[in-house]
Image (tube, rainbow, N blue to C red):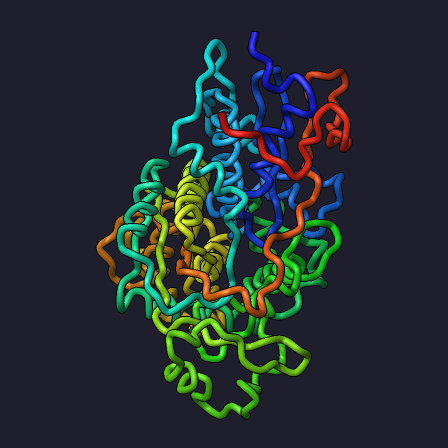
Length: 479
């Protein structure tokens, strides 16, 4: 009988690549359970007993609510990306993975996927699998300016084809759609930055799918909690989770730049390249930047944070799925990761610009049944008028909370020819050089790997260096 998970070394050979998947806020919201010598389960995050700062062990309770908040959806997408890496690692060892997505949605909502290694045959991985597997180490989220050189259309097509293999539909946002998304994203940043402090409500976090508890909290309170939780993932935590400050990227030198405001609108934005910025300052500076200087950081903010000119014409791509259920989020994660690995193998970098999608989800987390998202968005109405119009339209078109939620996200760009549900937005481009960039890579916490074959089940420790083949920091060798 084939026993690919016979010992800790071989287990880590398969799981170590999964840990290198992108995850929202570097939260790493996954855990693994070895249930047989040839089968592993991908589960929704470590348990509360591990004391995660943002409670990742609770988000699986929201997975099957009619209208979960942004964390459940984005964490599931992150787990889908980890699943794709694990599949590639199994193929690199010469085996075929058999994957079942969301096997028991009602009985075990924390179980996202079961992966069994097909016994009885081995073979060398095909060239494409080897190429993507080799790109796992190369891929990273690049939040710095890209060069002014447009990514070749052939590469964008290859990324679209890669996503389609996993039932995800990746499309380029051209012209007005790209400009609209930059405007809406900037408005979403402003809404999140202006939210109140949700720390005082930390003890009242939303339990899974309980409408009464949801209505007991105002939308402003939920928005404050969302902001506080986002702040927890963007500090210099020593726990191996979260995005360290140097990896957040520089402050943009102009408004509506293709960069997320992870600093949540902190004070000190008045200094641009050593000049005092009046209304519109930075826009004119950036508009006059040459392509050669598009990636150069210029000046510093008070406190030492750098500011930089981002590319004038960012290339954005939006990932869609047919529906908006947890199984679709897992497919979106696999499609996203296959596209990102394809890009990395072709020397193309990517970052994420998804905050408007998160606000849309947050509104429906508060009002999952009656759909009064347009009333509950509060200050977001003034910042995101398209979101309000979409929410109003969704109330007229569907009685399903799931369909209304998807419709709102679909209408963030206004009228489009696409009927599928948007899940992620990425910015792609060629890196502009290493000057001023920090060392790439994000800190990784030790994964939770439970060996359920033992009685009682026990947590598996990483093999010691110099022991029976230390897998730490290594990936299995293809072929």
